Image 1 (cartoon, one colour):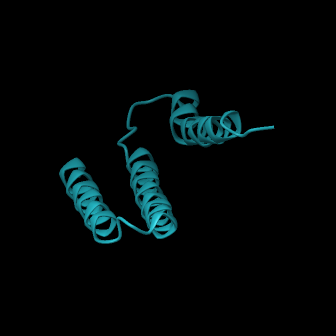
Image 2 (cartoon, rainbow, N blue to C red):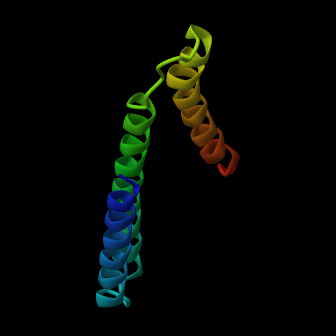
Length: 91
């Protein structure tokens, strides 16, 4: 599963670098393309990661551990990402 993620990531990075090289003189276009592809890759990787968390075999785990793993872990990830971007915001 992680091999497919890595291949998709490497393809996206290579594609991004090709677009940046093709439009090196246009800074605004480069930023728009970079941000849009970055968001696309981040969204894809987050969706794959969350589905990997939910498809984990939890046979033999206690109810509390299952709840923490399948509910709190993704929730804490979303909170961490939100705090990361809010921390970079200029007031």
